[in-house]
Length: 262
Image 1 (tube, rainbow, N blue to C red):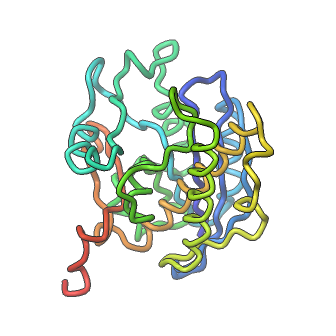
Image 2 (image 1 turned 30 degrees about the horizontal axis):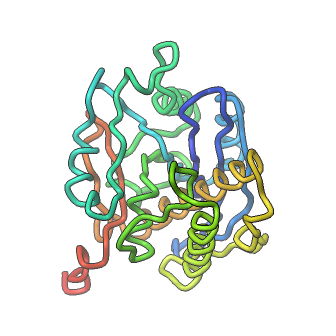
């Protein structure tokens, strides 16, 4: 099975990070095939179709896939915020005024164009049925997923923000890379054989660092897709609905600690 992670740029002027994981049949191990930067939308569609080929595939996208509201926020962001705001992992409000470019929301455009190749928008409840003809596209939110997967009290602050020092961001990058490497011992396990997570981020500047960030974030998206496939609603939760926009997020361990007892 193929898990494709997509850190979809909100603006068509910017490239998007993509990552491809190849999972074993049981969904217990995902091995990174490659990461790339891709632009424009036509190239993103071609990339997904090429790497999915004729195999079962899940596409996990960090971007709103359905935005029916003109203003405000979707129910998904409100519901997620009630749980994850305490971890500083609430989601930005998604609305058409904020996300539309010439009237088009890029996540919606992605779903529409992939539908011609057998893909469909999913709320995460049907991933176990993934097949060569049943290819779900799910919306994920990496910041909240990090809290759950890495056991964090606060989100990692590796992105450029006002009033954060370069030294602090580099330290947060080192933590991010270490947490991703530790997923090699998780269920499902993440195997990254190409040295991506050994990169010294201090050697990267400007666009090169942003390009690296987009590809690592896409790797996490792909892993979230695999994690959701493996555990389903046992350890993940869907916020919102397909009609209003559905976000699929792994939940902190205390939320599923009783799953072994049913």
